[in-house]
Structure formats: C-alpha cells, structure tokens
Length: 151
Image 1 (cartoon, rainbow, N blue to C red):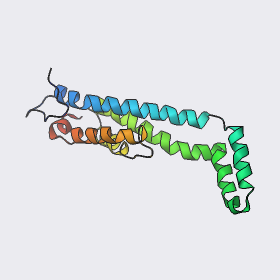
Image 2 (cartoon, rainbow, N blue to C red):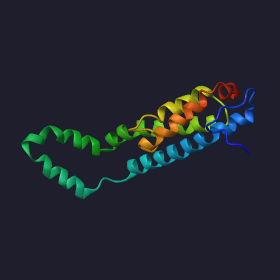
Image 3 (cartoon, rainbow, N blue to C red):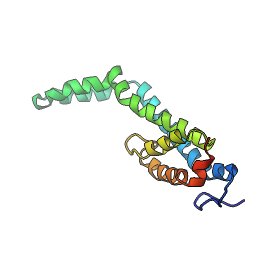
C-alpha cells in the first residue's frame, strides 16, 4: 500500500485514496483535541488550592496591587473559571468534531474549520503542537481530489 499523505492523488482519485490522505491528520487532530479538552475539563473541575489563595491574599494586601484583587477573586470563582475555560473547551470540542467529520469525508466546511482552529496557539489542540498538524490537514484538504471526495 502506497502512502498518499504527502503526494498528490492520481487524477480521478477514488474516495478511498482521499480517505487515506486525510486519515492521519484527522486522527492526530482528534487525539490532540481530546487530550486538550480533558485537560481543560480537569483544570475547570479542580478545586482552588487554599495555600495559593493565602499567598495571593498576602500579595493583595499591598496598596499598589489593590486593583488586581477584584480580578484575582473573579478568576478563582466558579464563574470566572468557567468564563476562561468555556471558550477553550468549545474550540477543542469543535476541532475534535470537525476532525471526526474530516476522517469520514463529510462536511468539508467543518473539516476546514477544525484545521483553522487548530492553528490558534493559545487555545488550539495541545497548544502549539496543533500548529503543524493543522497546517498538514489544511494542505491535504485543499487538494482538489480530496475536496471532490467530500459529501
């Protein structure tokens, strides 16, 4: 079996060849997005460390840092943690779902969206590790033979 991951598909390429071409980038995106989603979920559900909060409170007693006290209190509250984690979780869930659709050659737009979202370094899958895989997925998806195989 030949590897079509980096080479162009022959003219009139079949759906099986297109599926093989998108398979590895899609699987890597799913694994990275799944791991990043789980990390975000664990960090959201993890209780706040009381020792760290005591250190923050000692720092916030200084008059020049009084303005930061409200921000720290918000970020350690349930609503603040949810406000920070929710976009992160949603982006990675969308990348996972788009990669799943990419693997089955359905929904070209969602597959492209997953590839583009994986390029966001601060909240994409596995932070910066999603960058090369996202580029790879976009290059494969832009091949006319692969695009034609999507339903």
